[in-house]
Length: 111
Length: 117
Image 1 (cartoon, each protein chain N blue to C red):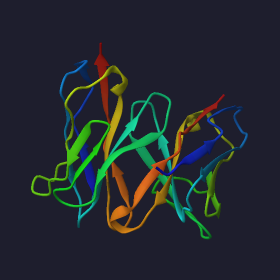
Image 2 (image 1 turned 30 degrees about the vertical axis):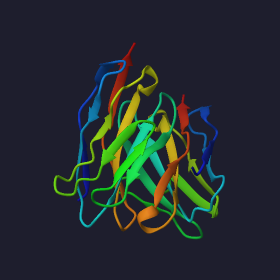
Image 3 (image 1 turned 45 degrees about the horizontal axis):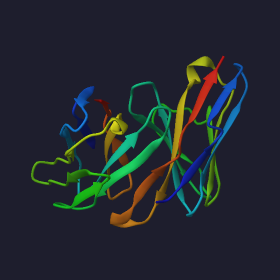
Image 4 (image 1 turned 60 degrees about the vertical axis):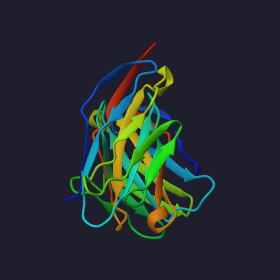
């Protein structure tokens, strides 16, 4: 079946450091790929998405590129802020509309 | 982006009572909504898919008589936890499907935290 594997956390960085959270997937067909962010006590917010190979999703300084050859969708940000501290979920949605989420990666950014 | 609301955001109830949680898409119509459960520091577990005008589709291991889902309109789905027990305490999150094909995206509600005493 479909699956999403995320880099295990927690990840702790200093402010202005470079962030990478790895995400790889297995799925039949050509899924759409997503990154969601969850702040403490809240639901999930869509951060960015990519719908086909080589697409780059970007938002609020975060980027991720849909790499079909490596089945990856790694999340990156050049300079993190304390306000980026949250849990990040990688997810895919198949053509049949079924979604699968990774286990989440907790990011803590220290001043 | 599209907005999904949930109500209530917090509920505390006694064991044996039933609790209803509402999920609304505020600025779009959603023929399909999803209900998830999230335990502390864990990922989302899909409980069921709610389709407007038809019965919900439950995931394996989820009791449909325990978790009643009604998708009454194109903007409202409700989850009723019947005869709640302490083990039902959790964070319940709904999402609504927006768009079609490659543009399809799920938008999530803010979640409802249920505590059963």
